[in-house]
Amino acid sequence: MPEKLNDLLKNPKQVLIGIIVLSVLLRVVTGIAFFGNEIQELPGTFDEVSYHNLALRVLDGHGFSFGERWWPGTTANEPTAHWSYLYTIFLVVLYAVLGPSPLLARILQSVLVGILFPWLLYRLTFRLFAPQARGEGMFTYSPTVARAQHIAMLVALIGAVYIYFFYYTASLITEGFYITGILWTFDTAVAITQSTTVTNKLWLRFGLALGVTILLRQLFLLFMPFLLLWLWWAKRPRLTSFILPLALVAALILPWTVRNYLAFDRFVPLNTNSGFAFFWGNHPVYGTQFIPILPSGAYYRMIPEELQAQGLNEAEMDSALLGEALKIIAADPGRYVLLSLSRFPSYFMFWPSGDSELVSNVSRVASFGLFLPFMLYGLYLALRQRFASWRDWLASPFTLLYLFILVYTGIHMLTWTLIRYRIPVDAMLVIFAGYGLVDLVERVMARRQAARVTAVS
Image (cartoon, rainbow, N blue to C red):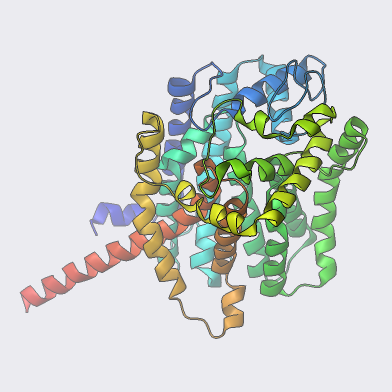
């Protein structure tokens, strides 16, 4: 390894600062040069149109509603709970302080995520590959943890330059903060398992990270039982230890549950989107071949006329469509299985397509397509690790990542699939990509060293 590079790698803090600067620049430049101050229907980012308009409505005193009929079928001037309350409030506060400027919101979001994302990737990766360090000395060079630091630095760098990550961060949607929240949650969970003494402060941090992530996208609630089960197995704390973080999660959700009851006169814990997604994702119109995005207006036409005629509010419609979806699946479970299997190509797509715009093809091939071989190789290496027993394997932080990849992918295979929905999984896979790349570099260097020794002898 060149001496200058070797010296640089002995200062992981300095390297990480440089990566963070690059991460922020890429996100800010994308926000300014590509998205700008306009709200547009660009590939994969249509939700920013909804969040921007919803924030303006709240700012103007109309509450969480739209002034016209809106996705997913919300009547004009009627309450909506389809969108993340936390992210909407984030935009409301920014617009109230800085004015309704999408560009300023993009810049601030890009700076925040640009800093936190690679930093958390580094922390989590270091904990994975240097568990004996228990999170200590992650920024101080030591031969005993040098390899873990090298992998963590490379993973942070990949996270900084991965096109999907900075593209979606620059858009006014939840992706950037949501994925950062997942990394924060996992980093804190692993920290709990590696700490000799787990304080209430650490449990509270875990609860806050978990609650914020759920408020950004309630889908994470479905993974929460798996996370808690893994955490219990890996640390074996008293079950009462979970009361504090779960109480904090409940406290963060409760105000919106109350709001929803007042708005819809029914119990809606957080958001009204699961029924819509499950119904539209499994409608008979697809047959056994899922289509990620249908033409405009097609989704409204799928809703049974008898439901449309009832004048249901958003929460009632969400519940009714969930029931309809379950009836559809029960009537033909074989079709549901084939339809679910047909979603795999759409979810794991890494090749260019004539049906996609240039920005989508470039983002797909130069991010997921470019790093997929190293992700797969890293997964292979991680799965080959030896543990004293299967119980130790289950307690490994790697198992947490495997669980997330499998469960999160499974959820979307059974419901609705878009490439954007896979991006949180990509955040876990880049950890394995960094692992695989470091291993390959080490193998090349070892062969070169062996060749030199042979030549000298």
